[in-house]
Picture 1 (tube, one colour):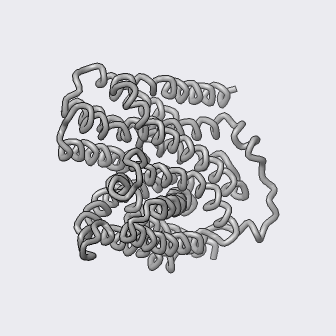
Picture 2 (picture 1 turned 135 degrees about the vertical axis):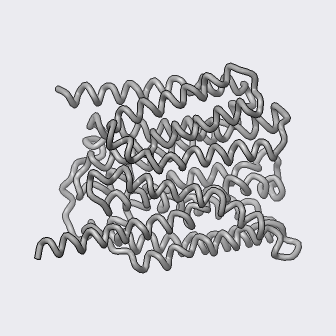
Picture 3 (picture 1 turned 30 degrees about the vertical axis):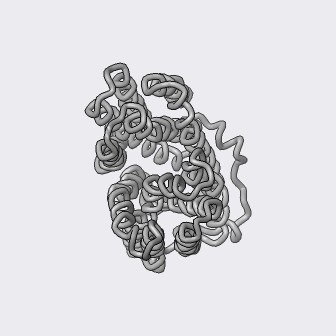
Length: 399
């Protein structure tokens, strides 16, 4: 009887992982479309040209704010209801964004982008749901599979948005957000077949540790620092790349776009092997490797800023992010108990995406005040912090 039950759970968990992977492909399109279009649309409808990138920045703030509510909401209503609600919400917000473009209402467009960010916070929870759907030794691979779906999203989202941009008469880009709405509501169908794998917080009395107690664990802090500052460095340099290449170095928009595309592939493609590498070499060694890959990016900035130099640097930047983010996330899920998961995940994602927002917001200012080489040098202290936090956790774990 027990064997049969175990087999049923195994099948259920793999079905959940498939649903999450398919949903990631469609839901995550909101992120690259926002990066691709929000600044362009902002420059056309904003009252001041200096406010053009505000919609993008506000969406990142929405992710950080949404991280708090996403985990809290799902702790009461469950993953399934939470993901379905977010999918429907994303669809409605895309309709609102389309209307704001048609109405030339910049602040309504910013409002819509904030809630697109909140919706993305729910999408970022897919990786934790994937971790809950497999055995502990398969967690890194499960998270890698989810992130791998980001490659499809990165090309499908902007591709469809660009194709649909002029389907609504004279209102350019309205069709882009209508098409994004269709893409983001598709996961609703998938999640109808999803099964919650844990008890709801409303059904159990919380007996776990406080946020301070969770973050004081060396391994929890190690995972958090690797994910947060690994993400901050990547966002900081990625956001500055188009400005440095196209505006400062006068390279073509097509060359700039090609560098960003290869960077995105480098962010997600290693997910095919990252889970296996973590299982073989351990979380800490993969984090060290991620920092080493970042150091190659920084070293490249000391040479002439050519197209191939940017391409080389951004590929290694993407590879480093993949190692740090997957190793950080898969280590985090090993540091808390079942009843602590929503509190721990909410704390982690709020800090990770708050730091991500700071990196995004500061990049444009600093690249304007300094240069590409200095932007890279600024990242070195954060890399040292990742190494020191990892070393500390390793030393304390051996005592």
